[in-house]
Image (cartoon, rainbow, N blue to C red):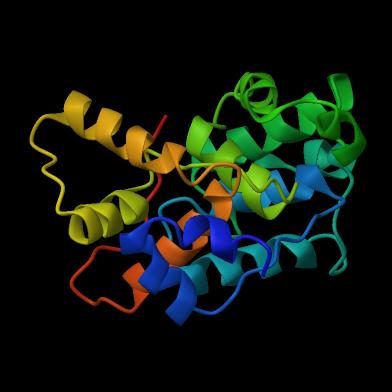
Length: 210
């Protein structure tokens, strides 16, 4: 893979990159639906999140709904698939934002990473972490570092022997280490997650709540 020689310059990361499975990024067309699914999955296991998302699609005949269909769906009907009051509001916020301002891949494609984050975090319920995941897994951006992701933090603590008692200093250290991975920081994150999942002692990834 094209990113391996660059990331292998980091001796500690090299063993993860060269021993792990290679990664490819994919782009998704329906950003609105992706963002709704991301909100639904927050703080849930993958298995539970998948069940809720299938229930969501089943409300619309198994197909991805339009933003207007989401807005027209009664609140209690969305609560009935297993969403909290807050998540129902957040999903409707996303649909409303799509209709009013737009978030199609073509529009977001004209923005750099920070511009996308600033643009989408206007939506109540959409935090920086969620937008970083969207940049990686829906827009296929290669140079995203999810500094607030607990899975990434835990993996880097173990790999680089970092001390996280001083939160400010810890964050600076994470960012400093990640700088040398640019412009392929997304792939570094993917390998750190992959390695973390093979280490049972490390916690599962959770979103830092906005």
